[in-house]
Image (tube, rainbow, N blue to C red):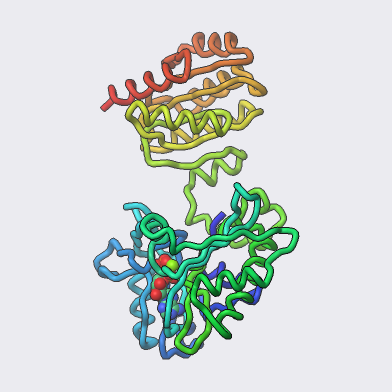
Length: 399
Ligand code: ADP
Ligand code: MG
């Protein structure tokens, strides 16, 4: 689960990490009050969307101009103007995709005098089973580019959960960022605080880009991107309360109600698969035969007929879906249950696109019979390869 920058900063502040004073606002009136309260003389008006690259992003609407989603304002009037231009409009950044995201909240923050910008992030490193930190002097820019072109500028280290952050971690960060004296001390404290926040809140990722040194020698987290481990949300009602469903894909929200592992993608072939590995293989083979998957969907090991029906409805509600591939290996899950679920769903929502069904495993013959005798226009397939070729051919045929 992702949250907005201003919510992330509130959490960082709670754990003693340095952030600027700021207020989240939903209207121009609120922005005026917030700007007056903060006092200036420099404000930063920041669009709040669940995507990065806002500074270099562009609004679609002419009234917001070509200006980015993060703008410096030198007066209360300027704050009001920028907020008016951003609110309700669509910001396109490298992370939003061409459709962009509508800006519904704005964060007004004290402007900082920046001496230098760094990159810092923390994430769960699965290979070591620890929380790893990534730091670089190349802040504010696309860190992927830095990693690609100048990997020597990226420093990583992981923290042993038995000891937590040690003084040597602080020294590693200070050295990597070229900080000495009091700033080195601040870096050590920052790492300690960020690690505490990361662990306490079950974060999956925490990215500060940029982490800055101000002209008066203070380290500060100028941006904050946090995502949480969904499996641990049950013990963080305070985090769940920060969820902004307007930022999420409607189909993904619906899927989460049925406990389906669903991720919307950009392609044309809707997929219903059981098991994450088989789902990944299915996406790969669709691409291999020249089409793009419309989603990742793992209905799980022991899906009920109701769950299968829900999954089918979610897939067919996507207007980009031009064909559906059901690929089920019946182990714990039985093929006849899947077959009944598919039939029930087709009867409930109708079927306007080609449907290929590949069943294998427990009760496969029963499952195939149910589909055959349903009288529905389903294309049966024998194996994964056959299924992928059939659905790709069917989708190409409809164009
Ligand atoms: P994004 O990563 O989405 O572009 P950031 O929060 O990183 O958004 O802001 C983009 C840039 O705007 C930063 O790299 C920084 O140079 C500037 N900026 C952001 N917040 C402030 C602030 N409070 N004071 C001064 N400059 C800021
Ligand atoms: Mg940033």
